[in-house]
Length: 299
Ligand code: URA
Image (tube, rainbow, N blue to C red):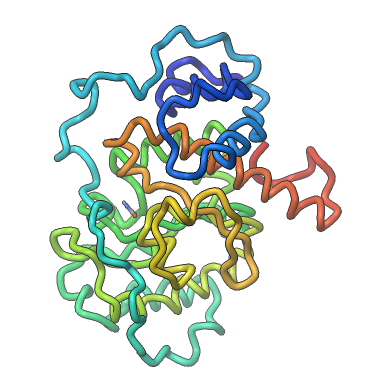
């Protein structure tokens, strides 16, 4: 698959793949120790199509002027800048005992009619999840924003477009080989941070989705999703670049796409995270004896 220059530029990865392996050209300062960061970027090969793509003449997107960025209002205005830990002390909430027995249809119906927390009062739609229910890749975000609440589908705003393009660079898409869900299925009013008890009441649904999809790799997008899945209070910077685990499935932590819309300099890091996810996926396949080329999702 050939990637065009505009996609390379949008992902902010031109400088990474053009000059990878050259220690001094990291487009921005990394939050991880330099050695680890350089290894991750240079070890992560660009997809085949990207190696074939012409050398981008465009400037590093980290240097794009602010005026190229859509106004803040155009984003899915989720509280990704908030400093409060998402997990903190998990609220103790009794889970409905039968959720882990539900099949897809029953689970979707249960979520659609859910009144387990106050978020049901102001939602337009629940946002269950979208994509291939047998995907090898599962992406997990935080909670629906305004557009998602209206349409009942995760990541349909500007952040969703960026996410789709990032997936496309890995030959992944929500139409064919990825499943996308959120930690929280109803929009928190005003896009406030979900409360601990809301997370706890919603958690059985995501757990069951993971059980049903049986992904080979999970990508947690943003601090909130990562902290909720991994049950910690760690920073994104400290969680990135490592393989975590959620109920036996490897988890890679990356930035939330809405954050990337505003922090262009971190897109290259997000690309490195996706490359780590891809390597992790390949390792999972190899451990299962699946031959290269026979994989279901991603190059
Ligand atoms: N941000 C999320 O985390 N999830 C969505 O569905 C939309 C925006």
